Image (cartoon, rainbow, N blue to C red; front, side, top):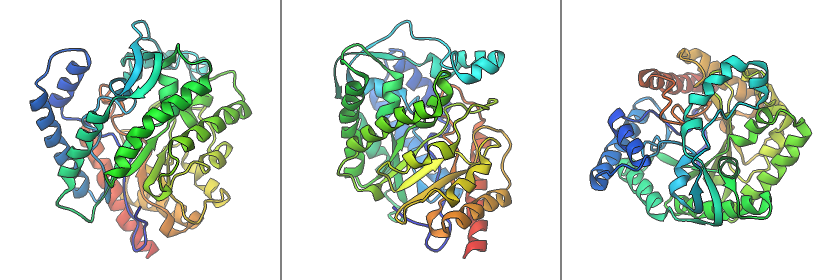
Length: 383
């Protein structure tokens, strides 16, 4: 993957606002309504082309499809994994038993209406297999078509980690959680390889790595680290043989606007994150809960062949960052790890569960414009 060798490059995490008409069609299909597949495919292509252009116009160097053909960064696997059946009684508050809800119960009751709560969960009742070959081929074709005229543009595509599928779906087939986890990894590996074989960068989305501590109110940091170590090993197994410089890893805290006093400290898990076989690590760093953690990277021991993609604009506030603030954040990270090993990014996706639409699309694009301009201003200071 490209490095910031002559200037600070800019990218983002993945999900971006979908056009309302496309989202309505996608949600209808998800609910079982009949759709014109040919018309839907054409509309997705149009939306991907548009979203790629909007990224480029704002100075984003490493672009993606905005995940506009999916209703969720996670639940999309419902249609790509075999061996599962729907769980009809799975609705509820995903944060109900968390540390956060314990201390702020009234606030977190609102999470019961989030996309994470209303999207369909599944239960494994047979061997987990990958059945999404046609779907990932369409995703790749749409992105290739949208970027065909800019051979110099680097392009990434997101795919969910085995850890998050394991946390999202239930197991009623495998004897142990670890067997279930590795089976998911083997299935998702087919999607990972399809993205790599197409010449795209693969981004692994894994909010669960950092979120689990807050969600498991009875776990200590060490409990969480023991759990995470197994998940890191499983992900590396799924990534085996894939060049690390073709893989980006993203993690975050799964909740956007909230008190978040129980987010895991980056210092408590950064060493395990760096064991993941990736060439770049994307994480939250632009919100008031985590902005101070740039100092973690002074002593984290980032390997020489790795880069970081800190969030320098956030999805947890409607306020649009000033480009000078973005630049200052980037300069701090450059002072910690070196200017060539920093790429400007965002805290998280801006429409991870598209149905929630927490930020108005105009605000999202204004934030990405600030991201691109901030990277330009940081470059003026660093080069």
